Image (cartoon, rainbow, N blue to C red; front, side, top):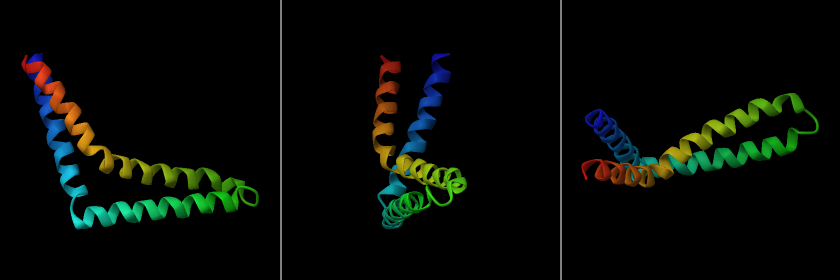
Length: 93
C-alpha cells in the first residue's frame, strides 16, 4: 500500500513539474495572459447580459469556470508540486 501511494505521489509530482515547466515558458506565459484577458471579457459579458439575457448566464459562467480551472492549474503547479514532494518525503520517513 505504501509503495502504491509513493507511485501515485511520484506521478503527481511529474505532472505538476510538467505544468510548471509549461507555465514558465514564453508560450505558457502568453497562454496565461490570454486566459486572464478572456476571463475579464467574459465577466464584462456577464455584467452586460444579466438584465437583458439572463438565459445566457449559465453558459457565460461555465466558460469563466473552464478558463479559471486552466489558469489555476498553471499558476498553482509549483505549490502543488511542493506539497506532493513534502508528502513523498513523509512517506520515506
